[in-house]
Amino acid sequence: MNELKIHDIQVGKKESFSMYINEDMMSSFLSTTGDTSPIHVHESYAKDLGFESKVVYGMLTASFYSTLVGVYLPGKYAVLHNIDISFNRPVYVGNRLDVTGEVISKNETFGQIEIRAIIKNDLDQTISKAKIKVGIRER
Image (cartoon, rainbow, N blue to C red; front, side, top):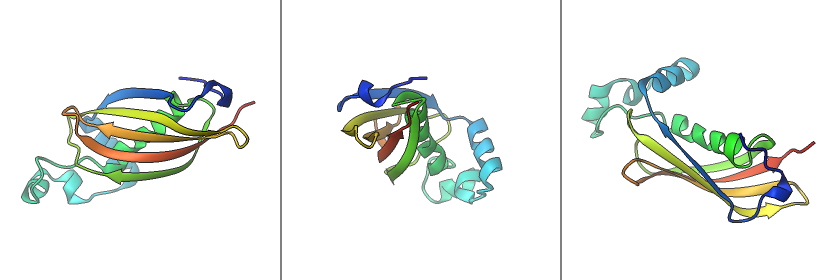
């Protein structure tokens, strides 16, 4: 876990990590949220709609933006203030997701940074994009 403070961060700073989506993640998300939408839980239903398989929950994939902020950029001192996400394509169990964030602005007076983030799949296709505002709470 990174422990970046506001003075450690410069515009242009980047961090990234990868995650593989597995069936356990889907089951845990279902158990936590109760989202039984058939597009996420029934393969035949999703295929009838033209998808390759059942579709991974969009908010499950978006949760990796929280990981980006809370673990990597800035890490320990982060408080997520705002996130604006656009979803571009479906994700399936077995996909590898590459999550990347770049600091695009910094306000030392208010202890806040803004991050432009993107998630791509293992085919280098954009899954989603986000603009994230993060407060940095230092001791």
